[in-house]
Image 1 (tube, one colour):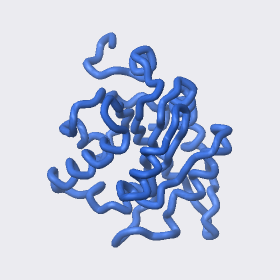
Image 2 (cartoon, helix red, strand yellow):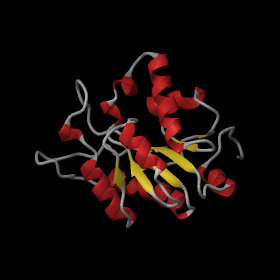
Image 3 (cartoon, rainbow, N blue to C red):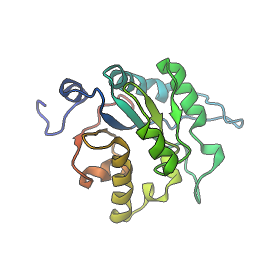
Image 4 (cartoon, one colour):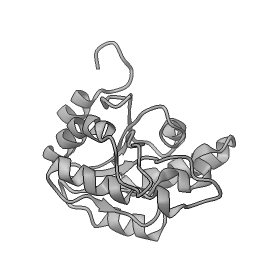
Length: 182
């Protein structure tokens, strides 16, 4: 961990992630046309190296991301379904899509992951706590996200509320941003 108090991707991989849950906050906010088709897959492609490294090392990867700026809760037009399909194509493997952010479907799917599997949670902004200005609400969301990767899990993040606010959650290995998607 040279020069940093937080581990890098290389540090995390060297420590070993096989069989461990890893929560990754990734920038998958891609542009969509009027029919909901992705018009630029650049952000998806930028996420692939980090995700592939974790998957190849045997991690159980849970990805959280947002798409657009949903108002007043879930909006089917802003579902991450097309992103899950495109990410799966680029990774060369199936990407499960949870039907919720931290609810029963997300928890069941996360618990069912095996080494090298990947789960994309539904649009994190469907949960109003993601953009809340209330520290308690953000922390509650972060703790629920941490539960999805279980004891000994790790976090690979950007500076988003769902990830950045989670350093007060139950003990985990918290990593600085090491994805190539900025």
